[in-house]
Length: 154
Length: 282
Image (cartoon, rainbow over all chains, first blue to last red; front, side, top):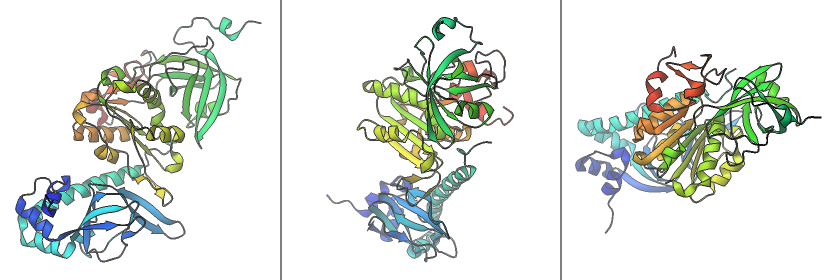
């Protein structure tokens, strides 16, 4: 028995609760991809033409700091959604994303996804709710990182 | 000449007992471990307890025991240099004498964890107070379900006990997940706050006892993540830090709400602490 892309998507926590119709919409703009270790998934400044749900492997979000080299801001792992720059203008990636290991992911076409969420408002709402949760969690985590809680208090 | 043991009376809890420094070892640029010889050759403690360490003429500080409870012939304490007393402790040499009171306080709930999964969540130097509990659990590994250690540090070079982290991570019966807040590309591991590890750690939240130690804000968010995954509040335990002085619940310096951290803690269950952790005046 083969597993369809709808079923793969339906099994992901990120899409839990989506109905079959919306899973089918997602599947219609999705494709499985692999990224070799050390390869970039996308570069800072590139057109944000996709987002990725990681199924296996680890990805580092990096920013190159002149004079200091690449700095890892955060790593993402299986189950995490990679990329939200496709959601808001100017639709360009804000960071580099590099595969730290062999990565298997589902790639969603951003143009088609934007069109789908604008056409079907219920689908759009469901999608935005899920991305909003990711955004809030990552912002909270980033704020904790900024606090430098392990630094010397004196 | 009388020996140190003969000179040491059975002292009251407020009187420091002289321990001889056996060794001092740098762990990080600002953190070191002291090995101290008890005057009568034995220092028994429960994982999670602390002592008051006295540098004569300078002062006293509360320090958690970081050694193996199965090896009571040595008192092991891992210390971060942050003030006059801890800086002075960094200057001691083998053969010097420091004062020790204790052990004081409550222990990690290892008996409660019997038969359940265990999740240790450590941040920074918070790994030191958890290490005795980790030693005990690994020495009695068959008594527990899954054993998971989640460790967060400021950067790869700020990670404590790296050799032991490697050893524990290499065991087939322990899951060790490590993350750092900051790293360059040389670091191939996870980057992000330790709370993020809770979501992907392999344990059954409904059958887990969690033990959390680190900066208070890190513990607060870790406890929230654990609870969010389904671990009940009473199964989450935190080690609190306050300005301990007497160690026996008399002076009130370490008062935290209606509790004294030095004798009703430092290890508390989260259901006791949760209402207080958000009260800024406490």
